[in-house]
Amino acid sequence: MFRRASLVFLLAMASTAALAAQTQMEKERHALETYCRSDIHRLCPGIVPGEGRIERCLKRHKEEMSVGCAKALQALKKKVRG
Image (tube, rainbow, N blue to C red; front, side, top):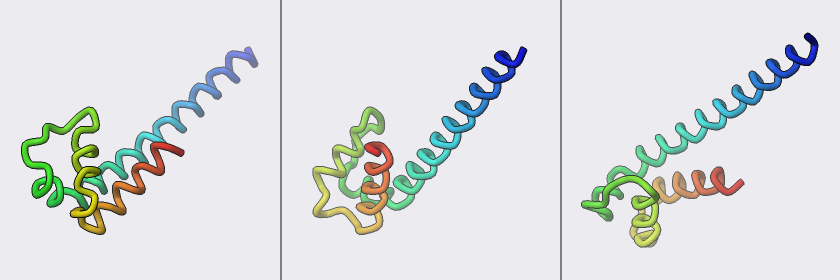
């Protein structure tokens, strides 16, 4: 009985941690969309979102990117790596 309760507790905690991480990632992606929207339209017209295509396009144009977009992209990279 104690083992089952412990297992349920551990699964619940793991689910909560995963949800928190997902929520944080969604916030950072939202920031990226907010701060990079005009850059994406200006620098990457016609690029279909998905599979990292927008990020690759922005990287190709990093010298032309706005400061806000560059910071949002950098914050997202740090979270993905670390």
